Length: 188
Image (tube, rainbow, N blue to C red; front, side, top):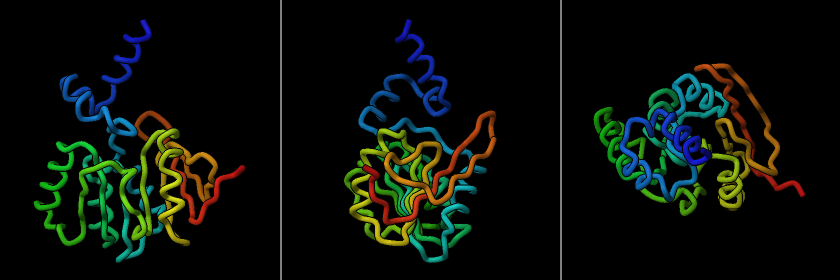
C-alpha cells in the first residue's frame, strides 16, 4: 500500500505525469529534488524579493525549464546562470535561450549543483527540499560573499535565519518564499 501511495504521489506531479516512468527514474535519480516548476507568479515574487539589480549575476540551482533565468534576464537585465542535472531539460532551455536571443545573458550548465562554484553569484535561487538545502548550505557559506542573497521557494535552509519571509496563496496552496542575506552562519 505504501509503495502505491508513494507512486501515486510521484505521478501526480505535473512534470512526472507527462513522461513515461523509465524516463522519470533515469533523468531524476541523481537529483536533489524532483523537477516541479514554479508558477510564473511565484517566479515574479521570488525575483522581486531578491531585489535584483541590472548587471547582477543570478544562479538558479536546479533551473528546470529556465523560466527564472529568462525572467531575470528579460525583466531585470541580470546575467543568469542555471544548473540542471537533466540533459533533456538543459537542451530545451538552451533552445529557448537561442530563440529569445539571450545567449549573452543566460547560460545553463549541465551538471550537479553541488559541484558548481557560486563565488560570482549575487543571488542564488533554489527550489529544493529542506534536506537538499542542508546539503547545499556549506557550499553557499563557502562561496557567497557578503551582500549576496539566497531565495528559497517553500523550503527553509536549516540553521539559517531568513531576513524576509513571504507567504502567498496561489494555485490552490500556500507558497512560502524565504530570503537569506549572506553571510549566514549555522546556529548551534
